[in-house]
Image (cartoon, rainbow, N blue to C red):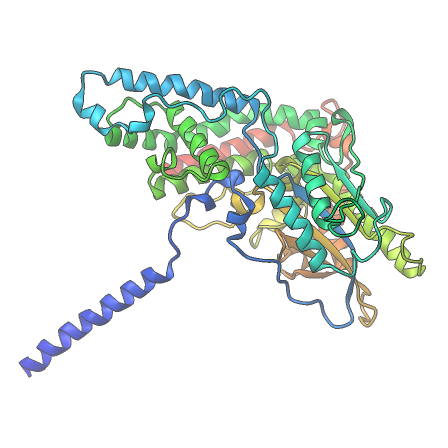
Length: 490
């Protein structure tokens, strides 16, 4: 009997070891490129997935496509370039401050000494980089392949409308997408390129794609909330500052950590360097810093305040108007080439995120009702808790929403349906019973109509008669955030 026990125990331990190693093997290795919030490259956000959606129900054919896309991967803006230039002297001061302390100098990262910003000397910031051009070029190719019937017509600006903001990285993204979409369809050069038009509105009046610049009430809200957002980040930055000081023997400050995290994101996303600034952070620190970025995105651009997305109503109205025109063309049996089949827009994270919120994407359970009542939602939970609101998913570089309108003549209840693709993947809409294929009638009633109770001018005029955001509401939201943070710290 004793001998049997001696045999069983080692076997039991072997089984446990096998189960443990198997579960570890199933977990993908940690990739920092997937944790860079809105600085995440499109390929990292999609994790190599290709557009491969389930076919529409039998008898349903796409008749129109709306696209709202963010520009591709870009250089840091001029403001951020100045921050990285300042980091050079800050790192130099850290090293000089440790002179005479051999222990600290041995711990200090060797690359700190003499480090120079890769963007030093750049006159312009925020320009689309070659990898960003490729993101949109291949997105155009995949879009044509995915909806070949929609893009079978000869090019006409009335059939395929392309719009972009006046910011060069957005208009360049539109051109790159068009080059992919219409590749081989023209007569220019050996690749048979063709010319196409891109329409832009003045920045000062572009309420459709740059509504965030045209809404004074939002600009005031953002300016007032930014200090509160910085306050929310402080506990995480303070903990990492302490860890860095112990780990590397230098007198780091909160500002150092913030700038090094920004450098990490730029190096990993733009330069494919993950062993320098990113190498300073542990995986647990990375996910916490990613969370702080996502919380900022949530508060200032997402569900943290209804004004963030309600001001995008002109864009939503334009999308719906294009769908209604497509339905009318279908009902009237207009000839091919005489009506629009796609409306393609290229803008910014500040455009894509609010539009995503208007569609009610990335919501859970009761959150849907709260957004319709224009109530701020609870902040995304802090790691290690899981969350669905992640900047790397909601709005990576080249992130996009496609709304495809289908004609389903065999359906007795509604002949027209809407499917939403987020980053080329079908996504469920809580307002449509968590389906990604929604009756146009239900889509209008449950998702669109509640937002159309307000108009842009009323929402955004500071001295308007019907302000959506009462000062008390903003203060209450801030109280909720700070109260949540205090409890989380406890």
